Length: 93
Image 1: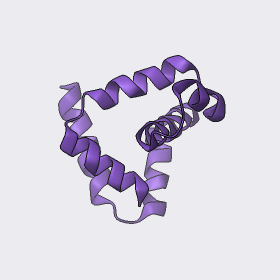
Image 2: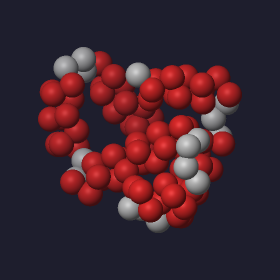
Image 3: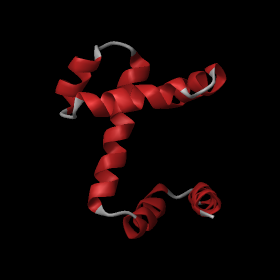
């Protein structure tokens, strides 16, 4: 049930092409802390995919715990090589 509702939510978000309006909708659904957490994860994933810093350097630069960096790294390992390449390209643009 929860996964089905998550996919419905993602589908809803994917339909909105206006970035400003999507941000307004996300403000409705997510708390400030949740938005901050997502923004932090975004930065962590980008830094991990850039492969320019050590995890300790990332943690210091992004002002997050090393555990958050490690969790992000572990999640990236679950992606297929095709998914990882697509994400890397998407985050570069």
